[in-house]
Image (cartoon, rainbow, N blue to C red; front, top):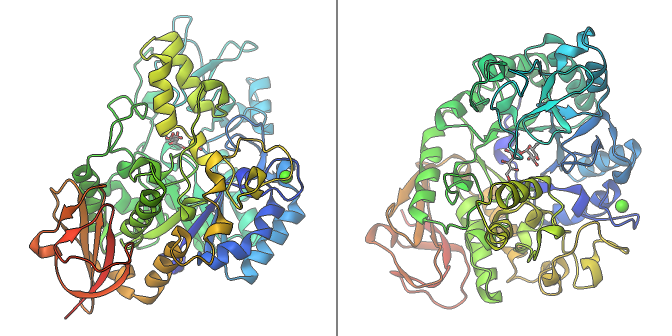
Length: 549
Ligand code: TEU
Ligand code: CA
């Protein structure tokens, strides 16, 4: 493992909604190849490609039925090879989604496992006998309902932590692990540059959570063998290639990250922690509309930035295919000027921290949440199941309350087609898009922004250049200023040679800087043209300053 990941800026492509090259309404691999110059112009040097493997169409490609085949709607293996070649020719590396906590129930392994209690494949998945005639225990699926599904043929239950079409693999089985490592080597031998590892903190489930004992819902994440398995994967696969890896670990803490993302390279390059995207969640998961309380968010970043310094590496993200659009969430998208300004402010806040930044397609344009009216419009298994459970079964929320939550937090927000132009279907496709395009594409689109020096796109371009030019962004220590302030997020980066000050007003009101955040220096970038007042910030104002010695 080299350490190029420290200088990487990752652009995440959700292929289904990125660019449709063959006009069937679904984004595809040739569409990604067509748009490589756009990603290159932005300045990103790594692409994370969401799953493109053959799948059963239940969970956006995260229900894989063949790890070595491309889903026909995305194209062919030749299309993939061409994409990889063209990306490498531009100095862009590609990391692939590795989804190995579960497979689709249509995967050959599962079909064999289900068909016969005596095949060695039976143990590839988590099968349990009923407990007192019912489910083995109270384990709950993240996508609502029990995590156990009964198979009528054998009378046993299999575990699915997500949709019932996504059966959890049994990582305690040596052959499962070897099968996964073989597949990883197969892709790395093709020339890909690493993996983003889906729910990798869930692979080593503690045995007691799986017992058929009628027990309660228990935590299946970070079981005792978690790091053992990742070290094995590192030894047998990753360490033999020049890779970058990022584990998706919603349960990670600063303490566990010191193992997962240790700078000694024994496990992964970095992880996605979830604490900063959970600050506006109620005790009951994400279905609420609570506003952001800024000191909480600052406290989380402070903990991760200082906690991992010199020990492990951070990832930095606001958005991905599971998260609502950041400008609609922590920014202000009610009018065009505030949308542009707050999208820039949020970019500056994140990109000047220590870690590898990830930009999710359309974030660089300040794309917003989608104005969904009714649940019938949702295409996301998570939102649909949650609606049925919370509104129709348990009557915990009215339809209006739940729709407000889905509009604010639902995953469909991230998955509407990329907005390339102001034309019909936003230039994403020539036919009917698989998912509706946000009506605001007439205003928010790439064509309007590329080359416009005041656009969100140009601002992101500059942020990436600053990161490349100033080593303090890569190496400097992080020091939070004004921790209790409810409007301003301000911090210093200091590498002993240079000091950088980053100030961000998260509110759409004027804000006042305390003395320690008023230092003078050279402003590298900001989101207002006119002269500034030293002690005051205007609504959603941001500035990045190199401080005088
Ligand atoms: O997400 C895992 C995960 O933690 C999600 O359940 C997340 O909490 C939720 O989507 C937030 O709304 C990964 C993938 O990123 C997601 O797209 C998949 O649906 C999931 O795994 C199952 O593979
Ligand atoms: Ca297509």
